[in-house]
Length: 109
Image (cartoon, rainbow, N blue to C red; front, top):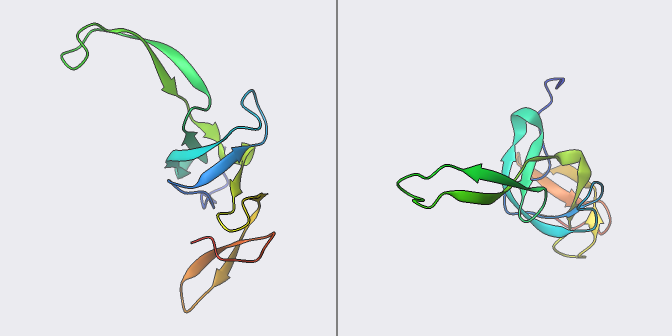
């Protein structure tokens, strides 16, 4: 499925806006990044309800809401400086790669 290029420009803790799918327009925070499958888990996006068997930690069991992974191509990073959804560029800064906002040109990291 993947062509070996698992570099994602979205990381854990980034604010993203969902651009397509049932949660389009939602702005939220990335909880987890899964670069092997180019997916991310975003807070309160793609929520599924799963039956949970009673365990020692959760003695009552029941139906739980869990965020499912979505593909990284369905979201855009929200620039912390200009607060707009943007594509992400890369720049080499003293032997260190830095993410750059394509709209305002400022560093994201």
